Length: 276
Image 1 (spheres, rainbow, N blue to C red):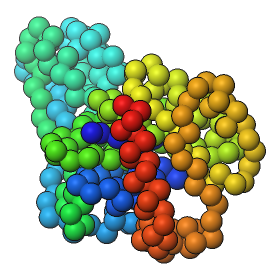
Image 2 (spheres, one colour):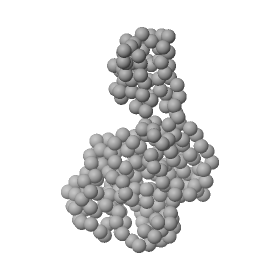
Image 3 (cartoon, rainbow, N blue to C red):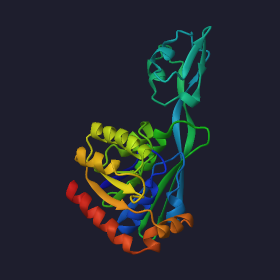
Image 4 (cartoon, one colour):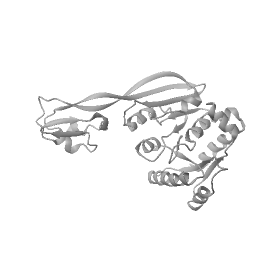
């Protein structure tokens, strides 16, 4: 079972839900795929046992073979190659490592070299298995690193994935192939607006999903109304609670600070099993 925890915007409590749920379920594994700013480790405090660099292939020109035909520029859909006055200019920051330029070069003047984009760290906290990715500062290509993190999925484990916020490529790369997606939102106009966008993405991917409303006792009732109208299951409502806030500020999972919530996440998992 792979459960992705996502949100249409940042700051809704996505990491809070992912970490506390992973700690409440036995035989679980937590993957933090928010590789641009991973923070699940702040709460889990895992013992990191392995670090692996992650590379993508980027093209390099053999000037002795290149005749400046421009075929590489034509096939690059990411604008990572430009041919100016028969000179090939490569912009590694834009390259997605797809290999099209190398494959289609009629002179075989391009070869692929490795470019490091980040690292994947793996460890555990007791029985909880943990992995996350850290994208190098200045790098733009999060999806290849996200895929590297997802390759750490262990068979036989209940996998909880903390997805990047938003509805762009990193979020989609993370949640696809999941059995269920939890969309975390807040009862505000911004929360509703971005929840609607996230719902459209998940429906397009054909993945079962439900909603958790965080800080549910503030704001308005529009998220509840939207979910009723769209027949979307509200899986759980987490109140704005001083005890939760204090635990969060200290980097303590609130299921450890307030044990009664652990039963809530256990029930949440059982509810998801029924939904799938």
